[in-house]
Length: 605
Image 1: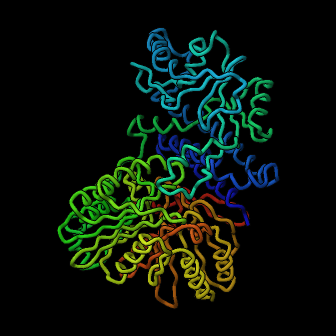
Image 2: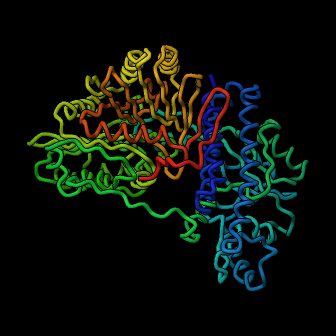
Image 3: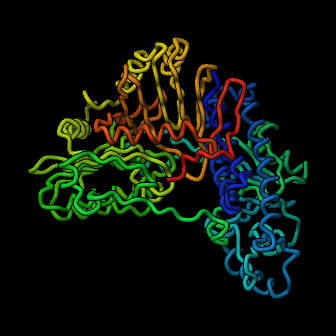
């Protein structure tokens, strides 16, 4: 068994390796460096918590640090290689490459826009530096670069030329220090877990106010940082020597996201043209009276989900229920819920306040929904991660069930399934799920599954395939549940074919598994399960990754795909991904193998 943390770090290496793909446009390869950096920050802010708090300094913890350090050095080399490839169309200049006209602008910018916002900090406060911010160390002071200022600045009049703000500040250190002196860059990452994770709405603000920046987990400093200063900083933060990475600036590559957006269109992926489902876009309720509809985003337009939500405004709809999780700053679906409530409909929303790092945004949505007349359900002890939208009226009900968040940005960048149905047996179960949440009790479902019942159903289905003609296909972001993994081993050893499509975390690899990870243009986010069941495929979709916490600490939804055409569509996607040799990594007990450069690209329409 591998630890989830080690497996996840290996996934982030696969993300980093996308920067080497010659079949990807140059700016998209840069974007993957930014994604890798954001992922690594999140790892040291949250995912490393268990080994850091319970086994700090152990071989397990030090092994994670060693892998993360190796990745950081690889990213450093990839950054410079990609910049060399981008020249001369796109260049990130050093201050010495700026001429007098450039400095005419940047001197004023630093004095007017940057210096008033920087903080001059005494060395005595080094232990209190903030998570993720860029700092500079001098002999007598520390300087904090404001988070709200862009890290990369275009050079006026020079097309494709940029300069890092941090490099400019170092070149003009006298604007930020009592007198000019050398500056050295560093960042600190900390655990950011709230101690009051289960706070309800009336406690959330207090919980956020009380969430102190946690223990430091990593110090990233530039190569050449004076050794005495580095020791002083490390000791002030209480870090081990292994918890210090020395890298050439820039120390945070997430600014490459902005560069990828601004650079030449020819160096970015061409926009896709998603299909608009017939009938569903014009009159979704009429269409669903006839049959179910299954979509696969982003190849099928996410706008269909928003159009279905708009049906809440139609006269025959009296009641609306929705789960909202990481919905972003702008959300057409949430706006529709607000309009429906203002129009006199009974609208119930479960807005999960405790989605990590989105709490403040969720609090803003909570106030908007509440003041518009939406009944925002109290937060149960378990997080609600299910993706469901239910419309009830005089002529029956209609439901949308999905594997992804109701987030318009993610709906165009993540692969996810959407199932729309008017089947009474499904609608009744979705309604029962919401009624249970409304009444503050655990849902009890039959056709659909939630909580531990998801694991029980998966175990029964896998065990039924434990024979030479058995067939199991599981697709998820994470597969770490020991009971499910053991059942898969038993099925594989009994002769069943076990295919696993696990994007990120897979903690057990067996020689009989056919396991692979897909990492490509789109984030693989859909979760699905398929079982041969003696000659006829049984297919399920779910909001849940196959992890203990999702069965024990969350309300997810696991639901069957009942229509023949919809079932065939899911299986077609899964089988295409099992053949993919453009975006895949073969995962084996001996290691990973890249499957690139082939003819089968499952991320094309």
